[in-house]
Image (cartoon, rainbow, N blue to C red; front, side, top):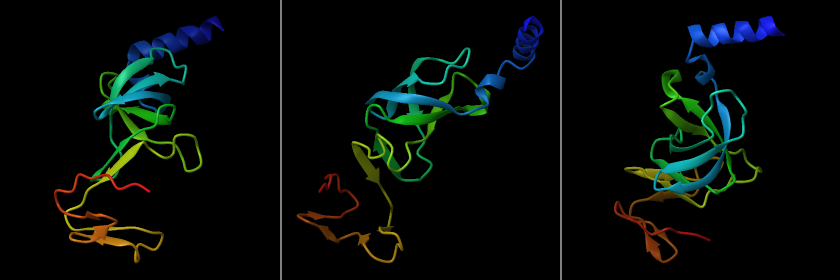
Length: 142
C-alpha cells in the first residue's frame, strides 16, 4: 500500500495535469448569466469542489439555463484546472434533463421533430401570438 501511494505521488509530480484529463461529474447549484455554479460529485484528489464554469453545449446556436440539481460532466481544456467547461448534460429521463429555459438561434431555419421534415420554423412564421423574426426575444412556452 505504501509503495502504491508513493507511485501515485510520483506520477502526479511528473504529470501534474493528468488528473484533469478526464470528465468529472458535478451538480448544478445555480446559474448566473452563462456560467454555472457547480458542486463536485466525483471525489478526485485536487478537484475543485465549488466553482463557476462556462457552458459549452456542443451545438452551435444553443444555450440553456440549467435546472438546479442537474448532473453535468466537466472537462478541463488542455488538462488545465483553471479552464473548466461544462460539456455534457443529464440524459433524457434523468432529473434535470429539461432546462429552465433554452435558446436555439439560427440564421435561416430550425427544423423540429424526429424526422426533421415536419415542424419547420422559418423567419416570418407565427408561434401562437408570436412571430419568428431575427430579433425575436419572446420565450414561447406551453
